[in-house]
Length: 389
Image (cartoon, rainbow, N blue to C red; front, side):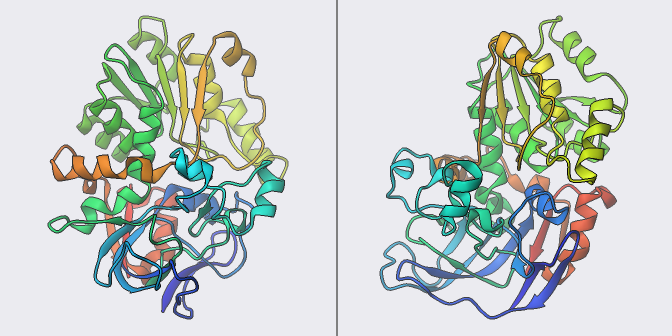
């Protein structure tokens, strides 16, 4: 089969690899019909996440048709159409029973490596470094799905791939980011980053009843998409984020702040951001946390900070004293996808949201390597790429 494989920094290739096979009685084999390039994939593309090995198959946002099931799998049948969440879950450990699926205790087959890096293991993830199990990803023609009697989400007839594909990651991620804020009708919710996750965070905050939602970015296409949803927009290249947020909140700051950017903040005109980039370039730092610094400074006292943006290592010069003295609540983590999928699928069916709005580019799997660069550099108005194996 064909698959997109990582061979080093900014080196993604479409290559022939052996077809996957059933390895455990609970497995299933999925023939891919759609997959996507995620912002988190760019952290691998740019070489900022440890644990990648040459030849690893990329991708954790995918869906398709079941073509084979293991003998102990009672959930799926050949021909079922499914979306596969990026978090691999067993459904049986203490964390899964609590709905904390992204920290499943059993599915990371490199548990000892994760224990060393994080203190305790987190869940296995598709196509996302050997720290999270080294599982082959879904930017391929076929994929093996372990624990397939638990994780996959069956899709009813009448919904297109484009409407449901993002149930595997960015829609639940944006939803969880907003839910973690405990949004009230009087709240101002400020969201840094209007990329794909930010777009779903914006719409989730609106659906959850925020008084006003503010989107912060510098890419015109992203800001236009945010404005179309009803958000107030701030272009950080053209105005002061802090001053504008204070103006919009009568000097009090937003009650809820969401970092939908993560480790590769792209602010260019600030001293802290320039220092972050220099340290990252010479391997003296791993992450660029400009957004978190700004959030800790501007968030209203007793406010809530939600962090769906991915971080990989150690963060420098965070104003933690501001966060502590202002009494900020900080909630973060990878997404507990299966906690949200039933509700979000129902909202799609009811017409509350059509997730396909975010797609700007659709192409063949073979075009994937070039589109990684297009997506990373925000060329050609690119907001979200869907690939058709």
